[in-house]
Length: 421
Image (cartoon, rainbow, N blue to C red):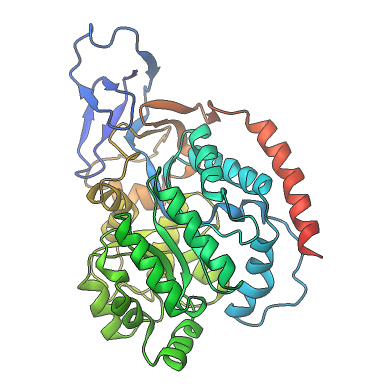
């Protein structure tokens, strides 16, 4: 148990402020208690939160763990001229060079970055076609070690041949027998009808859903029309992808009005990744006609959800109907996705303590303004995940950060060398 004293608690749903002690239970279903009987708190770890704010920690709706070792790598063999070439010459070259040691380092680095940024749960979309077997369990164990919750999938694709696509289906099925997760697909333009059907059948069999990139580039739509005589969302809907309330549709940039209506009329969720879209020059997200099931992700750019929220707001001014409250709603919507689908690891005992020394009054009514223009990851002081203190005074409690970063530098160098072959 953890006892938080002297802080101000901000309810993440109502934005109601309240003072007083908070007792935090440990475990995946741990609760918060207010107005505490001193006897009940006996033996708890006490944290003095004087002058600080306590609220629910954050979660990422779409991540790529493997990208952790990409920072600073050399230029690709060919300078990409469009989005498909970015994939071919950068990311598909990158993921083909991964092995399990690199994947473990990537996962540990990502989980630590999440934790230090107040993110206690990440939904990840992984690819390593030549280090496929055991890759999801490797990531899961690394996240467990740091103390960050997760919902993983493997990015099944036909792009490396049908043998690897089948291995991707097998890895997904094996992982889902013992862990919560999703069935991942790369995108419509790299997934044939047979693989698509088998993935949907697996999602149905395992009571899961599909996690897939959708119309991230216009080329995805063009390929679908040319090869299947239909648009991407229509193809996915016909295949049964949209029937699952656990399904996550990434990006959704180049949808027409009919496709948007299909998404809005389904139980599926959309995840927005504004910074990645800008980095790849593929377009700007527009929520028009997509409904309320929209959440935010980083697409592997980083692990800072406060930063992603700000990007969604500022870049969305000219392309989207988004204001203060809508930005905060999307930022928090990942919790609703997880809760409505009964996933574990994001209960109310996941908290962040913010050392936010505001120069202006902070109230329930003006909190969204502070959220967008004041609160940053540098204000994260303590992080509690499943009732366990994993970050204390800005430092990771659960693993040796220096040793992990030293190892990740070795693994990154190995990876970059492999990519040049």
